[in-house]
View 1: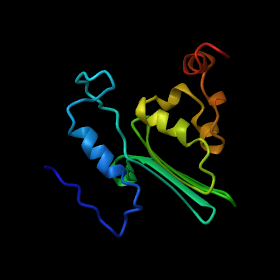
View 2: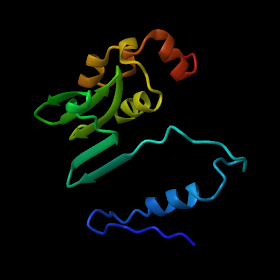
View 3: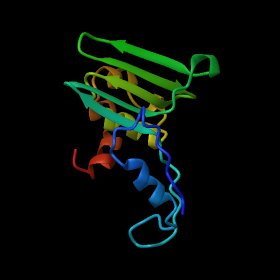
Length: 143
């Protein structure tokens, strides 16, 4: 039997680590019971405490390692984006976490940032930063 060891200093008590471990070791990677590789998993964390929300996802690529870091500081939020090879690799959102799903999608799908208006997305995450064709695909041809 495998065990999950928890760092109690960081544990929130959500048991998500246990579910992920059980799923990863179940040998079944989909509802149909067939073996299938799942290779686009990324680390993600989200928490809200006393009205302050924080969301992170992906990897933090340091500038010394060839990455680019873009920081946006506003009165009600802080956003930090980690870019490498023309793709978003990770982000940290503090305060206003809206748009986290869009940023996560960019990481998972390895979307080239030159195919959209990334500057607009960092300021105000919206599907309008994507091309009309991409919006049609994401929304099921309803644009």
